[in-house]
Length: 109
Image 1 (cartoon, rainbow, N blue to C red):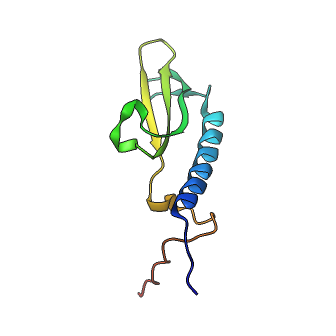
Image 2: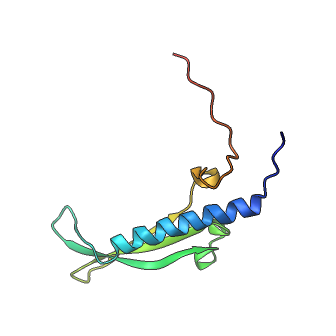
């Protein structure tokens, strides 16, 4: 039995799952305080919400779902930027209802 796969529909489903997960992660992180090894405190802030496309026209992110957050030092001395993006072919998401990658063979010991 041959199965026809609509790759564009699959991609949309994977993007939807990633965006939902990223929104949840950002909602949990935003406003949280953390402490650096030197005792300096910082607050995590959303830099930009999940999107598909190129952040600042970065050609490596065209068509890739990504989001960003900052860790801003509470004393105003600076911040650290984080860019998170969807990785892995098919994003390792097989719950879309289609498994595009066959399972690897069992490892023989």
